[in-house]
Image 1 (cartoon, rainbow, N blue to C red):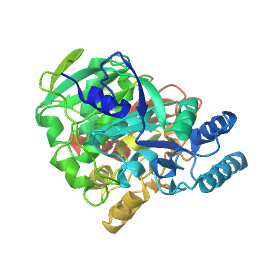
Image 2 (cartoon, rainbow, N blue to C red):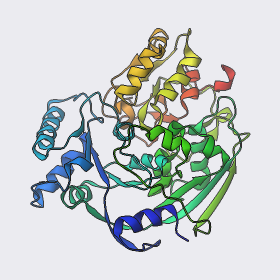
Image 3 (spheres, rainbow, N blue to C red):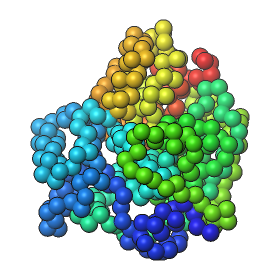
Image 4 (spheres, one colour):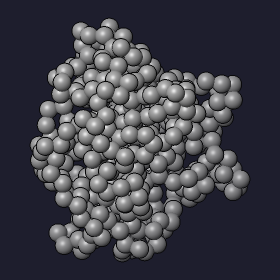
Length: 414
């Protein structure tokens, strides 16, 4: 009767693991970025560790402050580059490579049935491929670097069923915001979430990544879409190793179950300062904007940029519009398809692949009194700067809003 999480953690720990149990699990892959690797390596050294458990199973990506914006950041990044070379870690993505949560799947590490630990809360993104993926702090990551193991409490699992065809101008991001509104920001605390239904099956891999990326915004330990033919097709030729897909038993025990029909769902917007403070777009349409940010590990993929270009091509944006592709490969593909040219001609700014303004570090920080509509995953007070208001939306809504300078229903322009 086990769920996907129970099966993966049982395999990883070498013994049956049920919800509520504590498991000491072998980690398949571990990831840290420029922001968290600094602290993880510091703890690694302080515990007296000399060599990582397996350099081929560690991924380091520079994405949060990339390129470095201060001498301090540059020095910290230099230290990590030296450590990566010292440890023989070959899966290293330097500045411009892209956001860790995009790079890791592109490089074939996000595999069905695997246990993946990341030193970043949005590591749950990899659940889009049927993995159990979760974020931990720097000290836990140091232990993983040293031993390749970590203790975890096996989470109870929530089942979410979604039916209905998403309408014109409505995307996976809108559906995700709607689900978070209904479940609540703490409604899935330390639980795994499994997604099922026709709507989930119809989602692209990019859409599934958006969905699982924001599982943490409900407090979830992991978000999982069971793998199918779309998953296997994506992984052809890039999977790092053989994998064994894992599925919940038909009589698996879930602690809660939700059923949603999104056939009539309008575009959704999360209002300041909570991710679950979500409204239909009609309730916020007309809100003046100072900035639009399109990108992040939630919505910086090729599919997102393509959707934006379809709306703004041949027009001009009315507010500063910052676009960050999620990775170098996304940027290359968008360039070759003419999408980047369309965005530039419309007046948007293309920034290097990375996180940029999402965490309030650089390249698009807002100040007090400004309002930004963002396609990212968090709108906490001060997230993108010391002041200002952050609204969250889909790329389609962001594109339409950039053209009018105010929050706009994309269905008005499609």
